[in-house]
Length: 109
Image (tube, rainbow, N blue to C red):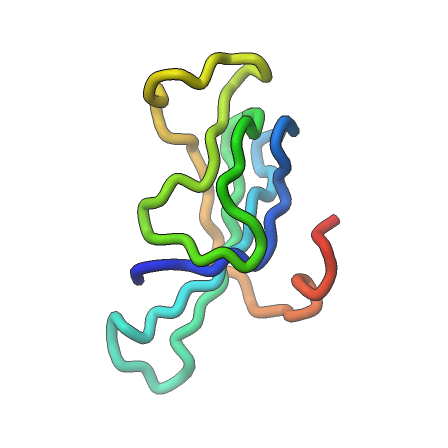
């Protein structure tokens, strides 16, 4: 896997997210990793495990994101300075989801 395509973004800049809050959905093409008998497309939902504020969001629906790229800057306080490096990466949960095209036909709720 070298990249993922953003299918939906549920977070917005300045908004808080609580533990379990949906952050975004991505589609990953794993066909370059190994041969498969079926389409090697997988869908994943990323949810946060901490209470955070979305300070900067670097992706939007349809963007192709390289593996390891920064997709957002989060903080534990709404006005926390963002200068300097992060103290630690955000804790997230990544869940495999079944493809449901109607989920992404309209703007996320």
